[in-house]
Image (cartoon, rainbow, N blue to C red; front, side, top):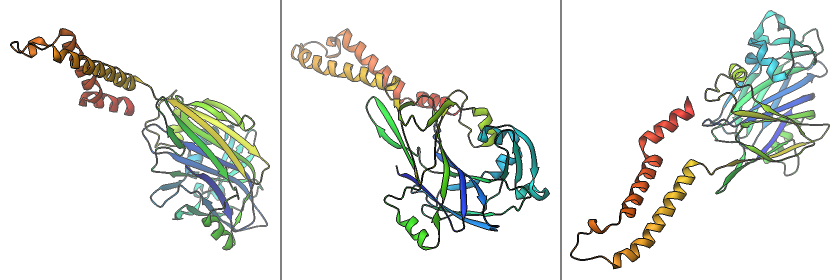
Length: 337
């Protein structure tokens, strides 16, 4: 799947940090979070942003996460990995955003997003108003795009394992898409990004087959209960079942993060299929020779050897295990409870 992302603006803007976080949740549609930390230049009143990604279409939902970060300091603590000393509403009203003072990173203005829409295929359009606070600290916005796809990776299925390839690129000008080219003709320009962070949330059953060790910074277990407070839609996530992989790069004109995960696909169902196939093939070979020795005067059923009856019984048990309604109901509740 093509995950070439582009961030453009009409006005002069310096993006200090750009966050990309993909979520692959079992039995749910995948989604991606985008976070932008920037500064307003030369008293600009408003910034017109366009975020471009090939997988976006008008059927996807999009939400601003500003209120999620502001309503509970623990949410911002987990997202920014820093404790908050003080928090105050901009101009006395949280609808204008909030000023968060962190212990390590300092002051950050969390701002709401104006008029965020999927304007057309591949393009998310939104505006940010200058809060005009007394501090000259960076501003931050964050939004979520929920797709209708099972995964944002390129999925390659094999007999024994499945590979999930994440090839995330930001502002890569090689083979510039027509959508981006048209935006540049409309006075938009690609933003300069000082530092880019790329996170992948995946089940802990995934194994990392390949990643760039120079960009990989951390792999840790996801604090599921804490993130459920931040994103209440994560109903099916269970504690101790997900990890977050953290990549970082900086001081580049364009960014690229390539990671390959694999998951073993040989499980109970595949083993049962193999056993039943082996039994069935053995029966077919045996029946061909047994059929030649049938006695016409004796009942056909009486001549079936005990081992054949046992094999038929095992095949019946396998069939009921794999395809019975009770098995499917059990698996449904196992996945969703």
